[in-house]
Length: 55
Image (cartoon, rainbow, N blue to C red; front, side):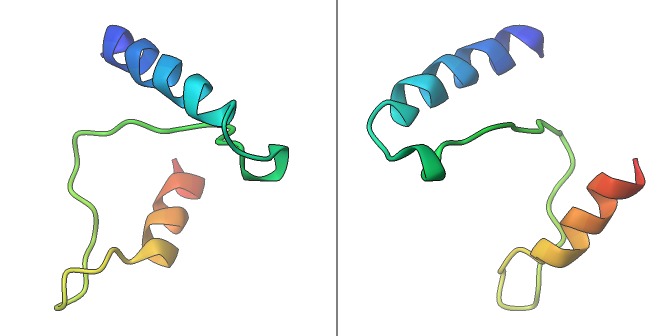
């Protein structure tokens, strides 16, 4: 998992060079769990953010 995170983070750093500073990706969380989704398959962002803050 650590190797995957490093590989993705290297790509993120490359992408960050192409966008303004206020759009930089500053952190990421990798998980194997599915996102909670609505009936129209949209990610329930508020619910996912709540999960992250509880852990």
